[in-house]
Amino acid sequence: MNSTYEHIVLGVGGIGGAAAYWLARRGGGDVLAIEQYRLGHDRGASEDHSRIIRHSYHTTEYTSLTRAAYDHMRDLEHETGLDLLRITGGLHLAPNDSAGRAEIGSYARALAEQSHASEVMDGTELRTRWPQWRVGADVVGLYQAESGILDIRRVNSAHISRARARGVRFLDQVPARKIVSFADHVEVHTDSDVFDAGTLTICAGSWTESMTAGLGLDLRLTLTQEQVTYFAAPDLRAFAPDRPRPGTG
Image (cartoon, rainbow, N blue to C red):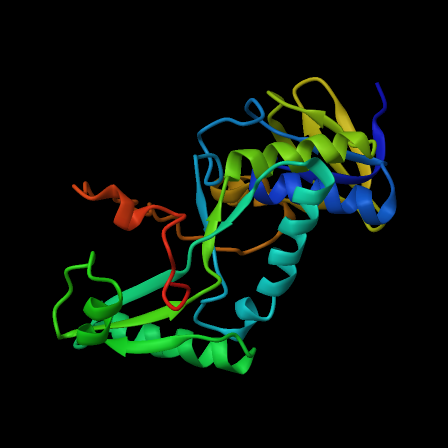
C-alpha cells in the first residue's frame, strides 16, 4: 500500500469529494482521500435528496464565487451525463420588523455588487406573483431567478467517480487519529497506517476541531443544527419544480 502522496484530503463529504476531484484535475492523480465512515454516509451535512444552490448570500465573499459553482455543475453534468442541477428560482422571505429584513437588504447589496439580478418586493406583490404563498402585507421578499436545487447525492457520487477516474485513491471507514505537521510535509495517522503528503486539505465539517487539535490552530467552531421544514400542500402543481416561472408564461 502506497503511503506517500502529493495531496491528502481528510473527509469525503460534499466539500472533500470536490476537493479530491479538483486536486486530481489540476495537479494529477497523486491524491489520497480519507473518510472515517462509509462513503455516502448520512452523518454529515451533504448527503440528502437535495441541497439549494444560489447566488443570494449576505456578502460578496460568497456572491463572487457562485458563478464558478454554477459553471462547474454544468461541466460536471456534461462530463458524467447526469442531471445534477435544476433551476427553480428562489424566494427569501422575512417580516419587515425582523432581523431577517436586514439580511434581505444585505443579500440585495451583495447580489448587486456582483451584477446578479434580483428583485425586492412587498407582501402584496408577492401574493400577486406567487398566489400559492399565503404571506401578509408585512412581509418583504427577495426573488433571484437563478436559484435552484442540486441532487446532492448524485453530485457527491459524480465527484468521487470522476476523481477515481483521474487516479485518486479513496479510503473509507478509516478514522484519522492524529495529524503531525512538518516544515515540508504532513503526516496523517490512522489505526494501522501513517500517510505522508506535501499538502493536507481538511474537509471534516463538525469534526474539524478534533482533527486540528494538535496543530496549534484556534478555530473555535460553533456547531448548529439547521432545521429543514417541509409543508403539505393540497395543490402540488403550484409548487412543482417545472411549473412556469414568473415572467415565462
